[in-house]
Length: 145
Image 1 (tube, helix red, strand yellow):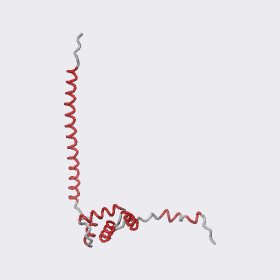
Image 2 (cartoon, one colour):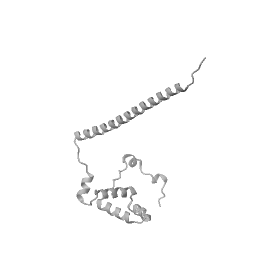
Image 3 (cartoon, helix red, strand yellow):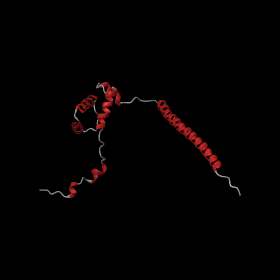
Image 4 (spheres, helix red, strand yellow):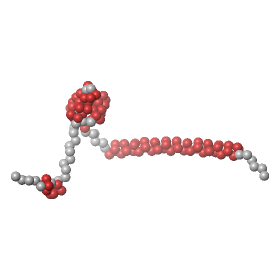
């Protein structure tokens, strides 16, 4: 009979140092599965919804996202839909640069609008302070010596 010692329970140093941990694979759900889970979730009573999520290993955000996709018509359940939605169309370098420049232009337009509003407010504050200064000078009694 072999009695294990604490050193027997540890993996060998050569195996743990040389092999990195395997990356977990991302789960992929078919449109049919998504539609079935959304239907089951929506038809369940409030107390049973959590049990469905635990049984399937899902989060409520999954079901919410899938229901929105179904309502938008993105979950048709056809095989062509699942392949086209997972692969993005390749964009040319010009398209990428154009999109980047559009985002930059939009940001600069937003910054310009904010700066113009700030300058407008500062002009109004200056006019208000000048008016208050003039009225304060007029309200002071004149000293006669």
